[in-house]
Length: 85
Image (cartoon, rainbow, N blue to C red; front, side, top):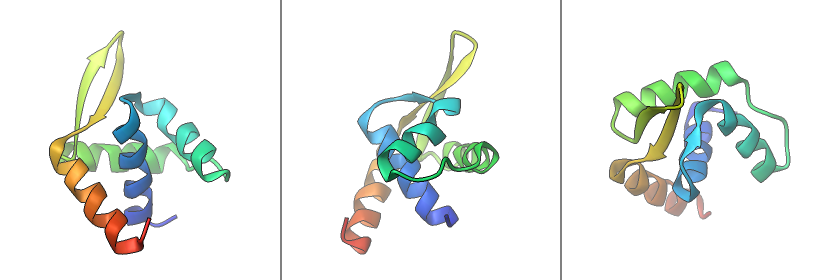
């Protein structure tokens, strides 16, 4: 899966509900009915999305919880329109 495609799936998962980072690969796999993306790929992209203000993250119960930010919602809508999703 390419980085833009993985970013789309991450943001789509977060658009529904905030998620802990370690749960996101499994949510993506459930939605795609396919293999679980590598956790290292998801983690690296989550850090990039967080740095770029596409997501917000907080520490809860010792784990990082991610949620979509307004900029991420706008990107998700734009990307979905481009691919016809």
